[in-house]
Length: 139
Picture 1: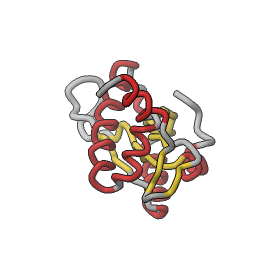
Picture 2: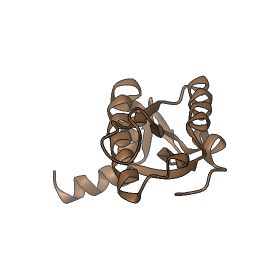
Picture 3: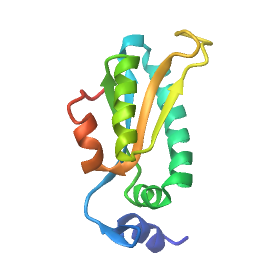
Picture 4: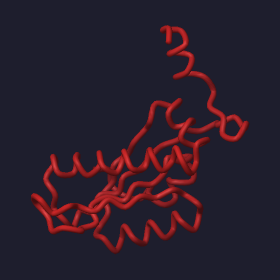
């Protein structure tokens, strides 16, 4: 792919199902703050969540996946209170048809096996995600 094609792909208007996307598409990662994970542990868990969410989106919502790729793969990390809070957010998202992925730890290092570490949402249109996560503090 030449540089012109590459730049065009990054800057071309995004379409979902043939409709022009007027706003950004993003992925949101809600971190379980109750676990008191170190920075490296959070980075690893968000990495797992990003890969899983990307694969799921490519399969379930390819139109959102393509728009997210074209927009530069925006990702936001926010603080969730605890596992219960993450599960509440998941329930809201599922009722709205927003893709979610739960990431659980294997328990090899800092935290107990099976702990819910990250809930990833999307990728989806910002106006769908902001009412759910807009009041959460950035990590």
